[in-house]
Image (cartoon, rainbow, N blue to C red; front, side, top):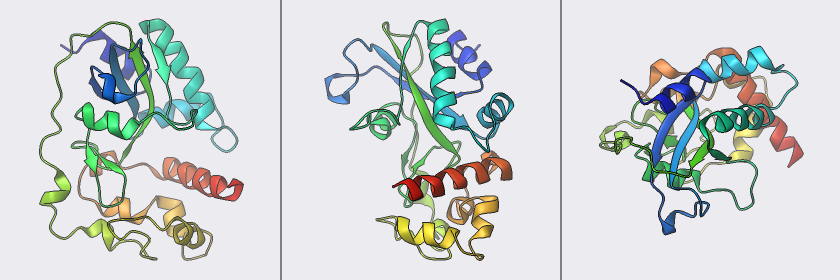
Length: 219
């Protein structure tokens, strides 16, 4: 039987992606005795967002903050977000500590079950240690992937296994040829064989692509 806190997180539309007891080296808030990373994996969170807000106008970060604050009050937990602190909280470091994945050749976190089709939206910070089993991410899936199709799928070779050419990617998305990526999502992500069952539906992929382009224009 699943822990009731994990069940409550899922009922709120989020996926519990990993958890751990932070130590001094983890740069967590001093009163955090236990951290659960939550976010999206597949379509469930986006479906709730689209029901409650207008994806063509509203920002997911605003909805996330409102929704997670309410969830935190119900669970007696505080929240930290990857988007509202400079320098940001070390979510990818926390992911390694939580057994929630590895760094992929694209620079994105790759989860052993969800592949590249997940994202961290918040961390729930508990004042007590929860009775949850230690997670093990298992072997790095990219080390067993001989062909590395993610590195050859991008039409403008924005990924070389060591860096991400953001300007080249953004410029391509603004062209007629780039509309395939805008409509269906990043071709490099789609090329990864891990977690294909959690790939974003077109509406979700388009939302994130539009947000990426808008952020580039504001930069």
